[in-house]
Length: 173
Image (cartoon, rainbow, N blue to C red; front, side, top):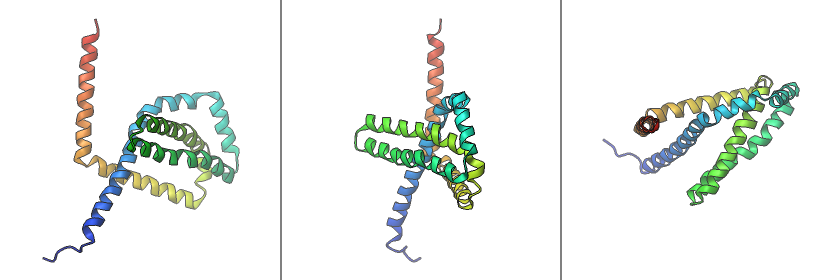
């Protein structure tokens, strides 16, 4: 048996780090979705939001792309800034920036994309990119969900839910 090349081990470590960071970002996104979903539904039900979506849908596809790009270009890098601040010990500032960036993403970017999706996906490059993003996200989620760490996190979540339900039942008269 021949030993592996010397560069194989550092490359595997780097790949594991990249996968870990991507998995953390995908998990963070998945964890935040249930928290914002009721707020997103409420916002979408507002008449002013419906009117703005109708206005976006009437725009030409290039204008929709520009309107979509502005909050996206601001919100996405802010998520990384929030994580970096938290990593450097500025947890509260990082959480505030992260929460605001996710709020902008969920409320602005998703509503604009939803309103102009049909026209936007007529750009072949954007349709291909969105397909690629969905594919990568699904593969990362499958990889994370198959991990022991994910199973452990689910056990902790279920234990906390059980504890909370038992606690709230014992608090009632």
